[in-house]
Length: 166
Image (tube, rainbow, N blue to C red; front, side, top):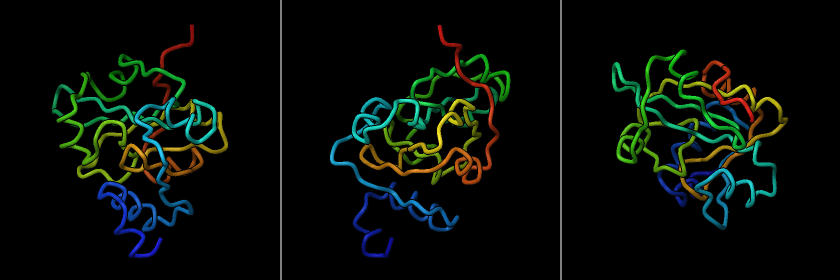
């Protein structure tokens, strides 16, 4: 992505694009014609399985107010108890907390390019797929990657962080 292309993108997408470029990731952000604030909207817009969406869920760690990012498969629900067992007690993060800590609005939180580095966990369920898609800093922005790329880009551990299917 060249400089002029990059500057035409929303600020959050520019941050994500720079991180992807700096880390040599082969796929830059793409802007969808429709907003994809939910995993289902993103999957529908891309024509892929819901599970291929790497959704970013933000929690607030209670002991130090740290931002905790859980990147989970779009067809799974995060188990807060499992997250807490790995990083300490967590609570819900409101929209102001998410924006202040990540630099992104809910519905566009990327796994990379945060204004402050979050504590990050990657859901092992994402590894069911060869290719996944993540938000790129804006509700219309996405980028493609393999689950192993997510590990490389974030440096985060892979863990069991989701509720069992019923």
